[in-house]
Length: 357
Ligand code: MRU
Image (cartoon, rainbow, N blue to C red):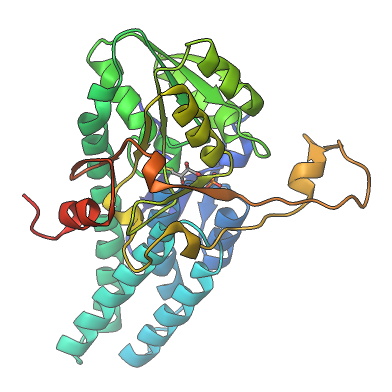
């Protein structure tokens, strides 16, 4: 049974139910988001996290935003609330492009309906917003499964796979991206071991990836982030597979801080480094990773551990949440549309072109 990170409950007056990932693995608690402010806070504080899950949640956030409208409000007012809410939710986190992609998609759909039929009732518009959010959610589930099926061949019998952060079901609406590859290889009966980097400072690997893989019955070993090089040197790692938060047109990829270092270590040891991500994670509007905004997070994530101070009061802290892995160091990007080996601007554009067979 693969866990469901998020679920819309009810109709246009419903709410978004999330697994509160801040509390895992100690407690399995559901969080109900009944307004955009609660959802904004859930995204910012990582109750819901992972690029695809943030995007799907934000799309449902627009359904919540439309609940604020009064019965007498007109279409123009509805579109204004939608636009303002897009701007508000988009300011929750800057790096994962799925957030902006999903908000734009829902807003564009609503605007198209309103301009094609100016007499559209507000309730019809609210329903259209929910329908589009549901479509994004369903598509994400399909994309996850397909990514797994496309990528499972890279996990050989008796492989040792290193992963970083959490790119599992908790990070998507479906069965994850990097972990989906593992779930599909496991389904095929292949035996392999996953090394899950603990992923400082917020421990998504130790808390979430290990939890998910253990539940799925996949052999998982938690390691500290600084152990990766030594694991590779000892011959324990046959491939590195991670997710992505944003992939530039040339294949440069933003993912959790520490991913770049893994790509360099993998290159040094001759180990293939794979990214698993849906097409919604590509940002073809930017040429390279240099243009990807990197989120900076609060100092206390680094200076405290489980509520205990681990660094002197007042010390300076640098806490970027993501880094950029260069395209040239990525053996392949595994998407739902297919696998892009040795990714570059041309091969990415070709795979993502709308009518790609
Ligand atoms: O800060 P987080 O936990 O949202 O970071 C998540 C990651 O870096 C994931 O690897 C990425 O979003 C891919 S999730 C399928």
